[in-house]
Length: 388
Image (cartoon, rainbow, N blue to C red):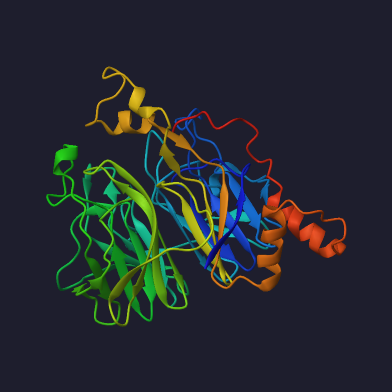
């Protein structure tokens, strides 16, 4: 397991939603400080070619009614060549309209849906279990409160259903992760608010329990776990490789810490293990995206503390203010690649680059591969001096 690629210049995005489709990764929306999130405008779409490591902006030329507005805190899931985007908000309002993006045609649509549509929210989770998209928890805009509800959308019939569950459901929360494996939805992390009503950072909690919803019986359970259980956190990333759940990064406001550690959970033995890949990985961060394509995980975006945040005056910084915390952060436009099974070719190219060897003697194919592994993207032209 080796961090192999680090490239700057990609989309500078925080709280975006991204999914892999084939050998490409599609990233939807998100925010970057300094941009306008009050005026309604079309959601931006970026696509990464995982062969060449090149980002491109997808040009959208459609009527406004079929295109989601730019937002953050939403979710995206892939089902075949289609991506379904749901939830999220801008600075004015949240949304509960389902949007569909066709990765073959690059066209948006608003599918006709039936059933009970969930209330608008952000900070929820979404994952695919069999032919269904499961939505869990999040912050309800109109209620100004959190929820423990589970909703599912049958992607064959496009029918929403409220799921009545039994068992010990997870505490009210947002910015957690949910992962579907073998008919079970695993929920971990997030900002927990036991009362369901958020009034102060003093009342938020960060538990480390792994919850499992059996989608056959609709029963929740707390998974009895062992091993190196990670510290509770929110705005982390979770992804699956070879039926293991991996958790990366995140933030715990009680400890005032951002993380860049990587943990692996075995859903069969319920054992947690901290894994330490070789190479130089990303700096501590939250609100990034992690997507697996083949034997590689692609991590991009997110936000981290500024190097000089400790020098801010008390007037500029209030430890109990979420907004003040954000002012101490900077957004990222970098791409990091974690290779679970690096080839001899990849290892040799990394060695050639680290030793700054003459590459003129290499075959043109290898020269080209080394070039794309080291050449920055140009999606974000401005310097990284913004907060997020």
